[in-house]
Length: 341
Image (tube, helix red, strand yellow):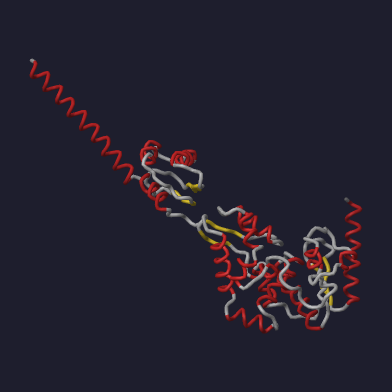
């Protein structure tokens, strides 16, 4: 009887051990081989985060099939790397652990769009999308020793930054970000575009400078080549550009309207006072405006003013008399609009 009891105790212990071993084996198999996530999760790991906070961040997304698997694996997570990681339905718990330890980042999109009229705005746009702080970006921009390596100074900064969507790792340094801008600028200026610039009697800096003025005048893409043609006609006939956006630049874009008093500001950027192009771009010109300068509309217009319909377009004129008539029509419509408000 005693022997039988010992037998069953031993058998029970063996069975328990086999059960535990089976559970452990299943867990190891699941952690390594079975995808443990539903949907897609974009995980941002900051310098202050440890294994537990990273795990909690993933679990908070509600995309984990078996939280216990993730918790098991993350008990052994060592030295997670800062970065942006994309977890998708093909990932196992072990793969996510390795991804964090090895720093297998998924690139992010750094999108430069909208009005970028000052270096500060550029710094904030970068800082809002990348790990680097906007103050760090601004410090880099305003350091002549930093940007001189790209063949530019502060006045020519916007000749090297072309608004676009750039894919790069979230942890990229400021220098790496600007290295990418310079690389894309050089790639954008193909031999064909260089020939187009030369055909207009311009350098890439000239093109970017005039394109920034066109951008300041109109966001309506279809008429940007027409506006570029107006300014090129003025340059070729020896007229001053008389571009309001350049005057606004002199006052850090603070005036809502350009008044006569503003036109008296003594600045090389004041195209009402000085002939030719200003020293550099007054904003970061988009590709549509760069292309508009490279391929302007051929016409004899020298003037333009806002359309009385207030649809964002302009009316163009070859003579000053025609321009005055267009200006009067706009002023009349503006006065009537203000009365109705």
